[in-house]
Image 1 (cartoon, rainbow, N blue to C red):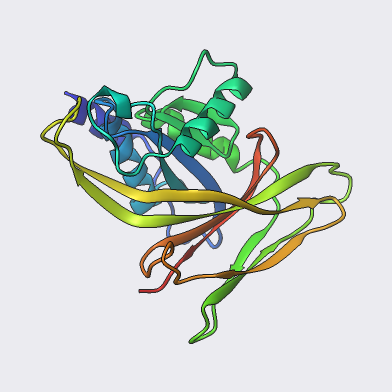
Image 2 (image 1 turned 45 degrees about the vertical axis):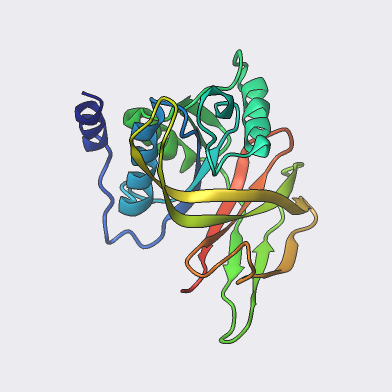
Length: 248
C-alpha cells in the first residue's frame, strides 16, 4: 500500500523542461533513520528528486541526514550522527514543533513536512525558486590538483543579513541490510548520505567568501559529493547552495 501511494504522489511532480537554460539550486534535507519503518518511502522520494530532477527551473541538491535517536530501539543506523539529531532539534525549535520526527524533509531551511509527501515537496521546491539567493560557486579542480575553490558572493546591497557558509561531504549512494528493529529483513538504499557538516566561513552585505577546499581525502573518496550552502544562524533560511561531484 505504501508503494502504491508513493507512486501516486510522485506522479504529480511537475516534469522539467530539458530546454530550461538555467536551474536555481535548492537544498532538500531529509532527516531519516534505518530504525524508522515509515522512512523508506521518504528515502525513495529523495532518490527520485535527486535522480530525475523533476521540478522545472530547480536544480535539487539533496542531503540524507541520519539521526541517532532511533538507535536505542533495536538497530544502530551505521550512518547516524548525534550532530544531525541536534541540527533537527534546532529546526524543530525554529518551526515551533513539539520535537523532532522522522521522516522530516526541510526545503531551503524554510519549509518542513513529512518526508514522504511528494506534493508538499513539489510545492516547497517551487516556492523556493521565488526566494532571493546569493551565488555559490565551486570551481573545478585543475587536472592533477587535489583542491577546488569555493566562492560565495556577498548579500545584495541593502540586505543587512549575516549568514554562515557550510560544507559537507556526502556519499553518492549507500545500502544497508537491516538485521534488527522496525525494518528488520529489508535492504535499504540511500543517496547523498551526509558526513560531518562543517562551518568554513561567513558572508554579509559587505563581504563574500572564498576558500580552497581539499578533495580526494579519506572523507571525500572519488564518487562522493562536496556540497556547500549558506544559511542564517539558528538553522534559518538557506541563501544558496552548490554541489561538486568528485570525479571517479
